[in-house]
Length: 213
Image 1 (cartoon, one colour):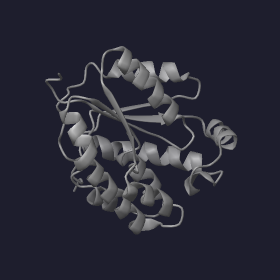
Image 2 (cartoon, rainbow, N blue to C red):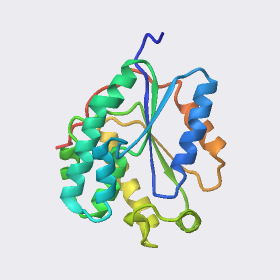
Image 3 (tube, rainbow, N blue to C red):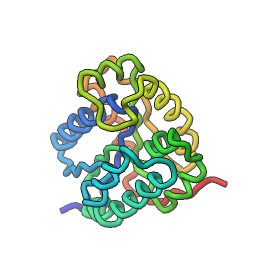
């Protein structure tokens, strides 16, 4: 039986950068190392989260940002915190960094987004994956687009730029950021880089995010 809190590890990055593949590889590595792993996504798998995912195709701006934040806070209370309390490692596909990119691209200022997400827990490790914009475009063309943010050819570079701009805001909230270019890395190499960053982290970070003033 686990005697301590689990670890929250989040992965963000432009659509098509390889988050889902990386999470699967990280999960295999953690399980091989003896960790019990719980994977999750944002928006969540709840009916409300799936409704948010659906309306994101047409809803924009503050309305969508509020819906995303509401789903995040609900998932935190009903899924993520209980799983962490049980001592399991949570691998979460998208978190606050994605909000500071996608909802900002929809025209919502950073400070408003941070205010909407007041009370969201700081993860133990926040991973932001990058890749060259042309590589992302090729992957999207092969995989197919999943949402409206991926349909604009200029979107990958725009998202890359916005993630870079988001990092200082996240660091001000106490996020430990691991950001790197995964263009030429295999999923195993990405997983190895992330897993190697985990042992030195404390497993007790539960401070809520608070907008900087």
